[in-house]
Image (cartoon, rainbow, N blue to C red; front, side, top):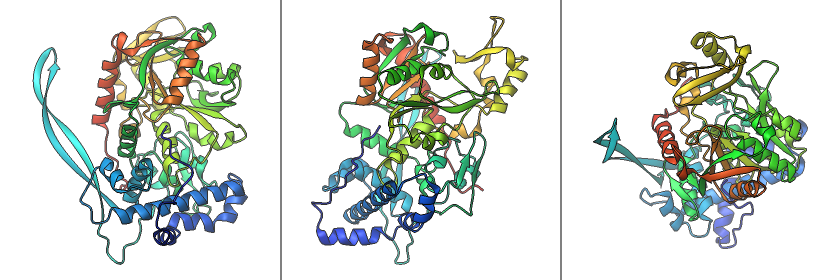
Length: 498
């Protein structure tokens, strides 16, 4: 997780410049909408008065900071984010990077993308061949604005749903100050009579605008991380398996997610876990808040249908510390909520993020359809599903397993998954999946110091057995190749679609 300072310090800023920047900041439509809806927000009960003012203050400070940055980068040629942080000297580099991306969405900054072609040697079907690869370079420049320029208005997040890009994570529903948004695994509805048109939902949506360039630049500031264009920044990568027999009974692969969650609960590092379990409709997942080991084991194993896990985050406010288990789009959403619009978390009790590898997921009806049409089986007889070796696999209560090529089931997947470039949950503390490890083991990517301590402590407690992912076959190489293929095949989002 990117650590953005919660306390703003403008001590080194010229007082006159600071006053002018603050004056311009409070004209921001998001700040005005949030402030003017104070009564409705407090009546909705999601945020206390103290939390309301904390969020408002952070938005004003962040917007003031953006106005100061914009003034400093005027008249500059297009520059890389790493170059811009050197120009803006009195603001933390992480904040400069974050703010440049938001200024782009507000219409003050333009993104200049340069494409270069390079030739590389690759082994294709056992034969080395020279192929062309595209490289993209992103630079940013303050726009020369007309006198009648109006800051871009951030639409309610329904624009993302109407464009077919919504991932149904549910984050917008949890953060909405007036409870105007309802999200399920298939739908998103906004009550226009209640919506205060503040644009907060758009600001934190993982599909509204990309934060990839910001996160790449911020992670590169941390010299302790290894950076990969395929799986982003990380500290280390392991192949691991649980040592606990109870977890082995419910695990999908190595049982690592359940093991880490058990460690968090047992050590009282968290009071509850946000995860998914099977609902009363078999193979339809539902998000749950788990605060005991018995219920935790009900969340074991992969559910290939999607669930709006983040839609229940606001219902976990009574817990002092929680962990969230989710797919890459959900980790992206939580990270965006940390960065924008004010640089503080909407819910401070989210202490750990455990990400799941995900190539794509399926709507519930899609899961039932592929079982019936591809396997000719009754879904009630299935005990487990898996994806391995390019095959979609189902295990029957008879002990038999059936397999079909993965390409044969892709048509059942959610189309909106094709807008996601992240296979390995780049924005988690710890990322977990099966790719790269053998049967009964999971591949684990440690993303930051917090994730490293959690994983190492679980290993020391002998809850987990681990070895370097570089020591196993097919290992890190396969994981990176598949991750890169997802990035390359990712479709661009066009929010102009209606």
